[in-house]
Image: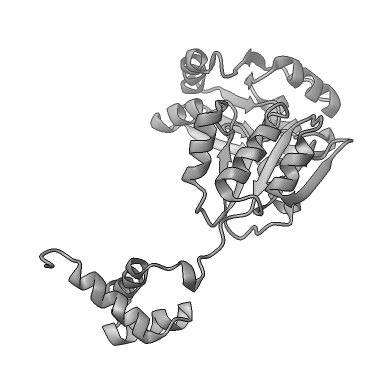
Length: 286
């Protein structure tokens, strides 16, 4: 029988946040793949555990080369524990390749839930948490970064990013340009650590603040784009909304027009004219 791959979340700052199961898995594992073996040693000392597993390094530079060896250990029946420097493996950390390879071979993959910088920052940001998306690290090059940010400028869900303290000022300035200077955001620094700080404000305000000396692990939380007001809705968008109600909800056109008018606050005549204009502009018009 094949073994089990265990993805273990590790503290993002305070070792006391480690779940009890992490200590148990460190002892039970036969192989431990660690992003940084020195940090693993410090963690085991903090938790007062003494693993007997074979420890191997598993980081971005050797992830591709080391994955086949770990898969072989799993196929041989080993219990392999994967830990990264902080948080959950594979979330902007090594792990995805190994998980994908294990799943492809029908090897059991499980996890020890633990602290998450993404969820912790989101929770303390003061921004909407009902819908969000994680964007990882923005590109390092200025042009690529601005282009990527503009791709999600209309995203209505709250956005969460990781960023290096050396680039956070540049990234906040690029966000102010792509999303608008007044968009609300939060810079979450050194979460759960001694010098934890959460700075909230507009992107313009935060970019000016970050122009000083910012240090530590950084997570950025940015408010999603606002819902478009009636003045922002084009005739094509109004016609699309009517069509969706007709096709998906089975409403008659008159009902769909009335519903769209009610939800946008626009006169029914304006919505009706938009539908007629879209019909006339369709294939064969003119």
